[in-house]
Picture (cartoon, rainbow, N blue to C red):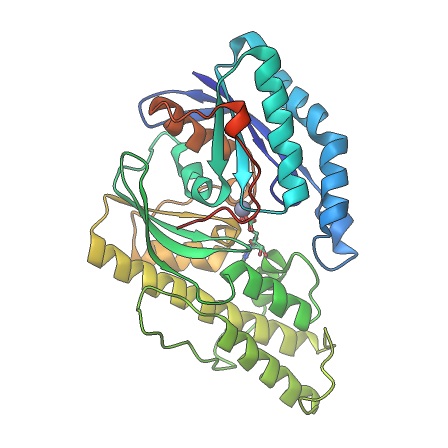
Length: 344
Ligand code: KG4
Ligand code: ZN
């Protein structure tokens, strides 16, 4: 089975062709990503209207390129999988409308994909696909949650963030210490030169031990920065000019704090729910320290290469393939873009 997958929930226009290679596994025939990161960098974050306009401009060429690189034409495609939410509504609409039109023209079944559920499924694009039930740590720009996924694709929420997502915390702290957007890769790089023990930031104590909270950490970093620059909490700036040494020490201390929380909760969920596999997905899964620390704690934990951790269409195709096997198709008139699609 060959699946054409489309992703346009935020600032990446992506299309991929996925070929099934076994009951659980599939492989990537092509994986095209047109990133708008450079366009949004000058605004310090994603501008929704600019993102939607950019998706319109490139979505058809991106899909054509995906088919071309896969050396296939529409006659070889068996289904179209597309992200239906959550995300920016204008961005989602472009992908969903394009998928519906193509499905009508080429008479292909459609699969509507929850972007957040697709992230851990990037791990199925390998020769060693995960086994169910699988424990997924999902760490993206807008979501941080632990899920237990069953063979019938039932996603059970075990814990989630009460406030900021891990990726969001990376982005906000990066901005605060002058590292710009996107923040995750910048913090990770700067932290390499820093001392992670320099600043002791607190970790949140929560009623439910598989939930997360990063807003207290964010405030603690802000307080530390204000102390360093000698400013009281009055006139807060968006960004502070710090010395390279202080910047890298803050980046390293902040990153170590987030990573230790993510690893500790994943270990706890693993011992409570005894999954057959542990996988990590979402942009923050590209973080080197998280990969090293979690691998030390859970040697069998699976990650994919960084390009498949951040937004891409191959992961949409991987979940699409599992849904196609269960005949979870959707009629075009029922498929709707849903910016606040539930992820529980
Ligand atoms: O999954 P993703 O590409 O998009 C969403 O679905 O949100 O995740 C984007 C998030 C951003 O917050 C970005 O800063 C973070 O992933 N990220 C990282 C790294 N690469 C991307 N965070 C930490 N370390 C990284 N290397
Ligand atoms: Zn994502």
